[in-house]
Image (cartoon, rainbow, N blue to C red; front, side, top):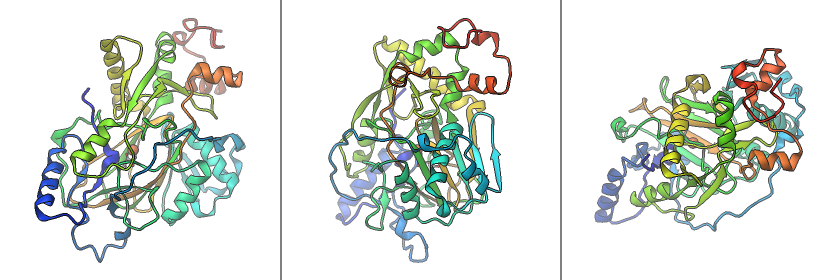
Length: 410
Ligand SMILES: O=C(O)CCC(=O)C(=O)O
Ligand SMILES: [Fe+2]
């Protein structure tokens, strides 16, 4: 698959105070990168937007240079949660699971009122359900950042836009408006599925996105469960994937930005992560590759890597049993666990405006099954089998007997 930069690069192309001829050149370059990034709105933000109440959160690309990221200590807040999540659930009017595999909506909670205990329980719920939704949330971006900071140190994106308002460089802005019609023919929807910035040494954990302006219909986001993908595989395939690592790369994303005449704030990196990672709190195994950033499975022949990745990418994008699809209203907020889900957005809403703000905490370094098991002394689990056991449902023959002894053989 050709490397692509992804929806994370959506946003405005304010070129700044450059001469007219340079501006033409830069706009030309932006058009040239359509294929790399179909979501880019080059002239958004150049129009008079005095009457737009969220103009201060429109995209900006500061010319600053940040040092490479280094390893940091992160302890997931889900470890501190009560497994029944009573404090969180008792504050909700309704807890609505949206599909068996993924997605829960909590009704009647004001995120501004969450106690630290409830935030810890939210981290656990997101780890279990993949993505959790709230509507009608008045919280400001500053309050959204405060919740994110509870989950971990905040990530600053090297290429995607930040808000115009100073001091918000940890915020990732998603912005599209009438100024550019996305070219649907320029990309495949499979390529656009991703988990955020998986090329980092410590990719994100409990990430939140709030839509502040959006279309009445259209502009949905979809998430795909990596737990469900893992569970869907044969025991032989699971064991095979558990022994592998893959390369995740920021290079294409940075190249796309530079080709668009934009400043890259931190040099692009590449990291090697396990193909199956274990969530540190749930102990469940999840397939950890994504079309946006995973380039190569290491230690196997290239055709094998291409074929396996292609198979996994297609499963992520096409197996609707792994998916939840959410229609946003202004003030909807989603929290997703980037360690165990991938996501993509729809671009069906042009010429309407869609504007959202993301807060992104770093997680721990992705941990393989082997490393998790030797560190904790516990056995990493297949989420689906755990659920069947909990519900007293017999485990299908296809899951029995074939795998190494992991406690599921009788
Ligand atoms: O626009 C969306 O719904 C999601 C964009 C995206 O991938 C992100 O903000 O991480
Ligand atoms: Fe994303």
